[in-house]
Length: 114
Image (cartoon, rainbow, N blue to C red; front, side):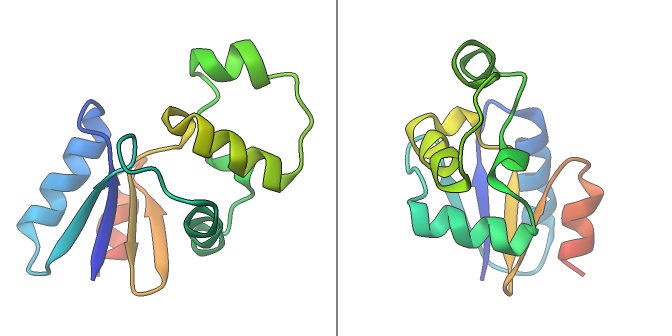
């Protein structure tokens, strides 16, 4: 099953959703701002993406700039920050068959679906 971590206000996320709708596979939408991934789920996503938590954070968000830009925190602490402020999670993320991709650019998701 395919899963998309989606924010409808994000144009890239809406674009990724359209790609999924055109495919032949069922998928699940998780609006991650309303249904925030837990620590285990985020840790698993990071493993699939092969990223450190700080690499999944949107550094141009005002919350990051104001409160976290100058912080040196552990991976676990960065995950906690994303759970507390899910707007900081890069989007969209699509998960399929134990692999994941961030849809920036959208071609990364298209490649994941092949």
